[in-house]
Length: 241
Ligand SMILES: CC(C)(COP(=O)(O)OP(=O)(O)OC[C@H]1O[C@@H](n2cnc3c(N)ncnc32)[C@H](O)[C@@H]1OP(=O)(O)O)[C@@H](O)C(=O)NCCC(=O)NCCS
Image (tube, rainbow, N blue to C red; front, side, top):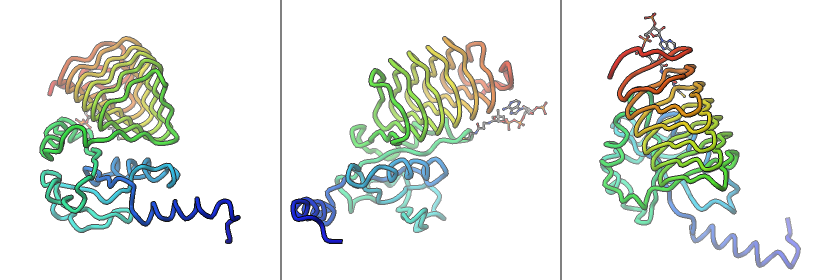
């Protein structure tokens, strides 16, 4: 297609930008399902408005090194992040590690990279809605169709998976994970490194303490003590630790 004359210089300059690779290389920690959702959140952005160019994943399972995942390579181990990404000295990172089995290892996993905090970036899917009065921390991920309400404060390295609703004035501390389709009513406080299972509802004003796990589909009506597993409707303690 021949561009109208007045648009030709614009087209030339955007071509030059692409040719010069002016987007920032981005590496995703982990190569599981959440990581593919993060990849989608990045690539869903219109190329012209996308500051990042995904260069690959890192994973601590040596069997995955060299694998192509959705068209992107698994470059090497998370704990060797600096070495595996030495070809991209200005690379930035985002973490996608964190399942109901591994969520407590997330801080150590991120620390093992020895990558500075300011090189972790936050990713918000273009189909998520974030109140202009909410605060989002460094390295945090907010996936498709999640809604973050007014005055919510979301800390560093938090993962909010697709379709979650975070009510106004909620506080979500570092490393917490909120699985798909969960609703946090207003004023909920999720403390560090807790995991809220898919499709749960946490009633207003409740605190889920550090390291706790809420089972899928639970309705949490009372505060949850640290390092406990609760589930059901109403949620009851399944075990401690
Ligand atoms: C809560 C959970 C961690 C328990 O796992 P577990 O320790 O392996 O427990 P078990 O499967 O052995 O179940 C133990 C008991 O709890 C019950 N139970 C397990 N999960 C439950 C849940 N979410 N709600 C209600 N009851 C549950 C089981 O039926 C079983 O009851 P029984 O002893 O009467 O038979 C797990 O079931 C869960 O919900 N994980 C979160 C999954 C999730 O949200 N993934 C998100 C991906 S996006």
